[in-house]
Image (tube, rainbow, N blue to C red; front, side, top):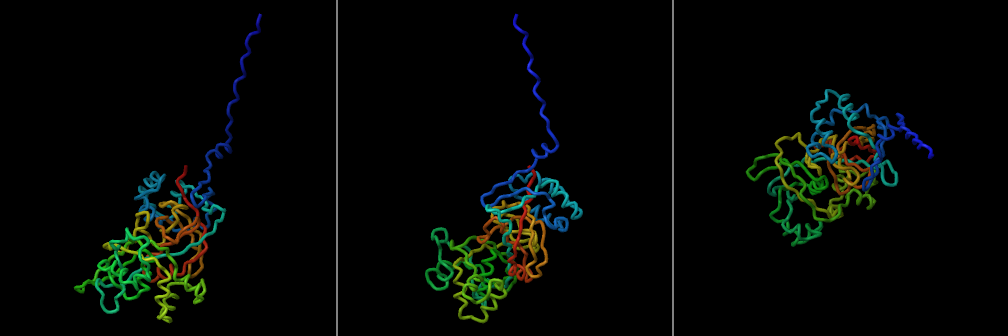
Length: 361
């Protein structure tokens, strides 16, 4: 008689320990084209509890008008919150976001922070008196001639000058001011109209001549005219005053020419629009390499003040980019507009560490 079948022993129940459950929920590193994001605890962020975090909210909500992928839920919650103080704003970020250390693909965690600003210039709609240096809207042949004329060619070749004739927006008195607004990518003009009326308008970036940007400060360093740590708009202007016969040589060392469109400026407290499409907030918006950090990301910066070298640690929004802003740990900090912003931005060349704050998986 055959033996009765023996029942197989029941399968062992899966045992999940608290540690295993936590490990399963732990965020993973994120690989981006030019950076690697490594998850870290909030305690890794130096000075995190000392920031005036509520000041981030206008920049955060501006960025949420065009939220990055994965940010819709956080943006909806942020829009409904009106933080009463820094602690409440900080608590919201900690509940909804996960910090990641941003590092280069080779593991480098320290990079460069520079600064930019929106120049504020006096201008005339027509050439008059000392105001003879033109700022242009895009010329008609810009899309068909690549690369377009260089800065030197615009100053020396009749054919190049003919290309921009009739495309003048305004005239300024100083060729360095014209270069400055091109380097910064936008500007505010207190413009005098032909009938004598004055009004304020904004120059917004509208394209360039397809030549690479070259820093005139770096050119002066290469010429042995100043040390790298001395280069700023203040020292460049001083050099130009002392060596006026070499001014064009310096200006022509940067072949890139930037073109603009004019926009009304009914509210002087609103910054220019960055590459994300959101208006920039002084002290809370930065330009980044979008192949390292997506627009709309919240970042934590650990750097120093350019003039005092005091620690500067704060939450900011990635809302802009620039031709010189490339690499994993590379930011350009928006200081705003006016003389103080120009001074701070011109001196800012600081080491920086960056953490990305990203919605929890």
